[in-house]
Length: 133
Image 1 (cartoon, rainbow, N blue to C red):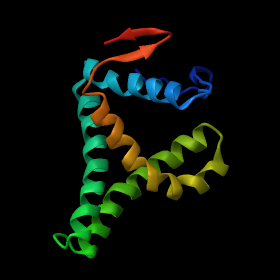
Image 2: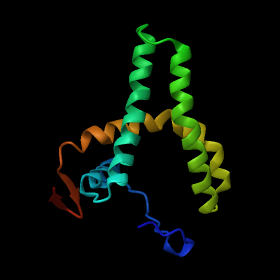
Image 3: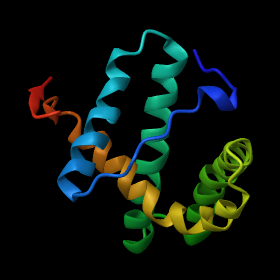
Image 4: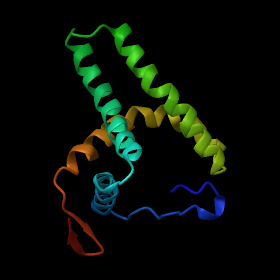
């Protein structure tokens, strides 16, 4: 259950290496398979699908199978609700200056989400020196 209280916020430090970052994100992304709540499972699949669809839209647009107007509709359908949600989260976390970075992050995020969504299909990861499933 989500607790919307600043005292329940957990902060993590960034990893010193790319390998550590990779293993952490792989571990976090692999948790969706263990969700018990159908809404959480749907949301995880929805986020992956929207981001993968955006990358597919770029490929289809470049190859002429999708018009750029259709691609823009896909981008706006994905990005506008995300910007509103992320904006609310950043304001809750008292990080209003980070709102400026949302458009930049939106360029990287589809690759990030799709990559880790595919990587977690191989279920092993390393955590605290142990190889886990």
